[in-house]
Length: 233
Image 1 (cartoon, rainbow, N blue to C red):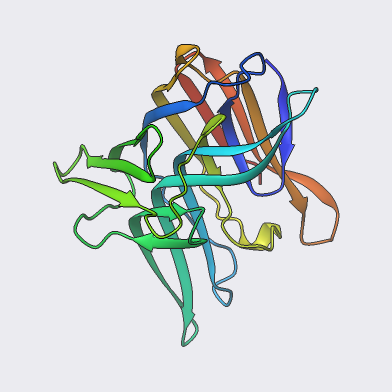
Image 2 (cartoon, one colour; image 1 turned 45 degrees about the vertical axis):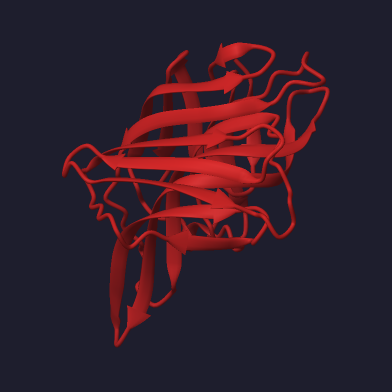
């Protein structure tokens, strides 16, 4: 299966190229939250493990120019404070219509927890139903996000299982050392194709501390239902 470069995420993607009118209705996945380490305690940084549905142009070579994406996952943030790094992990979601991350405060998550996430869209509606479950603690949350003011309905033509640097700067010093993340039981539902699985991998490339372009995080597809992301030191 092909692998493509990305400037902000690595992982697996499903994007049927032979469907002109179909779109994704749902996506789900399960993974273990990594213990993220940042080498520079003096810089604010973050790293997200997430599933998402998005819209964008799929090129003839299979690469994706993502325009919108709705994400649900776990966000790690590290903020410098008095020579120390104050870190936290939270479930979150990201709206492509608000361009903002929203942290969930009613459910906890920690490194080593096994988590499950699901996103479901409603046809011809701005409503998106999200579910997160911390299998380790038993905590569960489900909510419906609605962009009623704009009335925009997400007609996603790609689905992704990702690890990414949510900072604009992809310098290796801001990319967390996360080891590896394994997404298992991954699947998505497409209106034309039915149940689909990742069909291409993404690897994150960006400038390292010397300014050279390097692969920072690799994505690989082990089989139909397993996506592995690996940090490259």
